[in-house]
Length: 374
Ligand SMILES: NC(=O)c1ccc[n+]([C@@H]2O[C@H](COP(=O)([O-])OP(=O)(O)OC[C@H]3O[C@@H](n4cnc5c(N)ncnc54)[C@H](OP(=O)(O)O)[C@@H]3O)[C@@H](O)[C@H]2O)c1
Image 1 (spheres, helix red, strand yellow):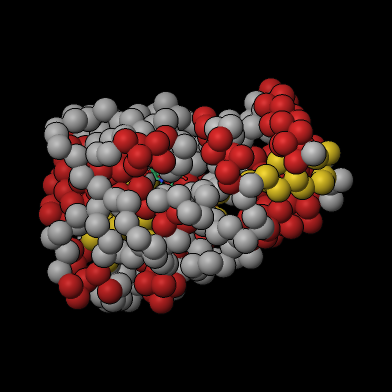
Image 2 (image 1 turned 180 degrees about the vertical axis):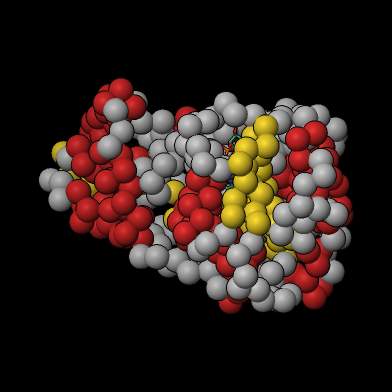
C-alpha cells in the first residue's frame, strides 16, 4: 500500500474498536430483494455492544425481531441483560454457536479475514442471510465518485492479522471476500459505511464540530463552506441494516449520504443551530492547513481538502443503497441528538475530546493565521 493512502487512513475511518469482492455475480450487486419477509426474524449479532451494534439491536427489537448476541462479554456487558448471549472469542472461540440456527446474522465485529471466514463457514448452513458491516476504507485511491465497482485496496501479505491504519481497509476488503465466498453472494449483504456518527460515537470525529462550537469564541474551520463531507447517522445505518434483513436484500452497498448533499458550511450551520452558541467561524485556507500541518493527528476530522487525492473519499456514491431503501435523516437531527447525548456523558469524558484540535493548538493556529493575514 502506498504511504499516501496510509496517511489518509490514519486520520480517517478506522473503527472505534481498533484504533475485491471479485466473487460477486453481476446480478447480485444490484441489491435485489430476494424474497420479502415480514415475519419476525431470529437475528444473531456478532458484536452488539460497541457503538453501532446497540443501535441495530434496538431497532431489530423495536420491529419485533428476536436478537441474540455473540461476544466475549467484555464490552458493556450489562447493556442487554435480557438477550441471549453466546459467549466466545472470534479468535478460535466460536464453539458456543455450534448447532444453533438463526434467520440472519449481522457481523459488526469482523476486522480479521480469518475470523470472518471462520464465522461465515460455521454459520453458512445455520442462517439464511449474512450481513457484513464493512467500510468505505476498502477502496483504493481512485477518482471521484467512488462507486461499489471502484478498485479495492489490497495487501501483499494476506495473512497479516494486526489491524493498523495501514491494514484496516485492505483487511476489511478481504473480510468481505471471505464472507461472500463462504455464504454465497445471493445470501450475503455487505454494507460499506463512511464516518458513522450520532449518539454513542466513541471516536468524536463528527462530534468534535458541534461540541467545539458549543464552547463559542473564534473557531477554526478548514477550507471553505463549500467543501464536501460525508457521514451516515448510526440510526439510519441501523434502519437500513434491518431493512436488508427483512427484505432479504443481498449485494454490496455504499452507505453514505447522497453525493454533494452535505458541506462544511452545513455542518457549521447545524452546529450553530443546535447549540445556540456565540461562535465566530474563522475559515482558514487549505494552503495554510497543509503548511502548518493543522490536520495532523486527527486535528480536523471528517474534512479533506477538495484538491487532495483523498477527496474522493468524501464523494462516495450511495445511490445504490438509496434505491434499495436507505434513508438519511436531516443532518440537523444528527447534530441535535449528538449534542443531547454528549451532555449526558460524565465530565471526565467531556473534557477529553478524542478528535479535533485542542483549545491550545487551535488558539496557536488562529494566532498564526491572523498574523499571516495582517
Ligand atoms: N465507526 C465508524 O465510523 C465506522 C465506519 C465504517 C465502518 N465501521 C465498522 O463498524 C464496525 C464497528 O462497530 P462497533 O463500533 O459497534 O463495534 P466494535 O466496537 O467494533 O465491536 C464491538 C463489539 O464486538 C465485540 N467483540 C470485539 N472483539 C471481539 C472478539 N474477538 N470476539 C467476539 N466479540 C468481539 C465486542 O464485545 P466484547 O468486547 O465483549 O467481545 C462488542 O460487542 C466495524 O465493523 C467497523 O469496521 C465503523
